[in-house]
Length: 432
Image (cartoon, rainbow, N blue to C red):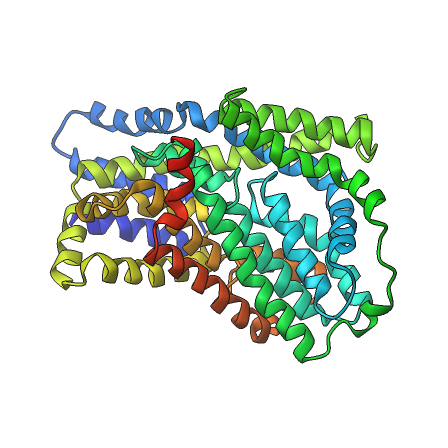
């Protein structure tokens, strides 16, 4: 009964418009108070204690820095220079601009850890360029929204950082390495329908007449942005710095590129950049703290045990349960962001992971891919929402195009589900 009350209060608070962090905290406090109704009042001190314990974790120090990295590179002009370099590599012609958009989003995924930030950076450059080349705005928004979903897979990833502090046995370096191949696979899967749809419908006919950017000049201008993922991931691999320290190095590098190299960031802009990063980080950390109360309630009240028993009673087995979770998490991803899904459902999913003996790193990548699918699946797709705002189209106009991209991304996720080495090979090679 207490478990039902916990989730009922959470859902009712959400329906009433209460922010998700507050809804998690309220539900957890109500459950703790009910469970300690006959105990001394200081039993309620479990709430503030778990709020502090939830964010007093070393890996979370990287979170505000990666948020700052996303804000810095969003304003540094790196995206535009990468677009020119990608266009110089693949040339001009029908379907080439969507391919460029996806490639640039994948590279930016190695710099920022936020899908919506990636959609804003890529969409701010690519949507206007695709419009000039004759691509429908709804199609352009669909491509950008789907491409930005690779951001939470290709390291660094804020979602992986949050997952690592919630699941024992899943370190940040291992998750970063495990997300690389699935992220690239997802990006390549998106390229196929994007190019095929462009050529089938004759989109981008005007693109063939546009001049091809000079290769060496565009490479020189894009080299600072291309070096960022190498610096972040390579530095962690050779042991120069930890993932937390890598976030600080990436932020400092981004500020250097924006202020000294491209000179697109002025001293006067720093206050706005730092303020934006601080606000986003504060919101995430507050949600993490309040979710700690919720997770404590789920674990101490043994709410997860009946869930595991119910799933076991269904007789679906390991693969069947994974497919069921695939559908459920994808639907949830339409309405909630990835961090919120992790915070709400990991306390329930972790016992399932232990029961079926799923590898925690592989399961983290698979779960993140499911959430990434929801980021560009209407009606509440956060990446698609950003892209549609930039393209000035309604989200329902993107449905005919998003469907094709969704099928290809699901195919990539199913490949990781049925062939775990796609995620686990690189961590093993690197010794994580």
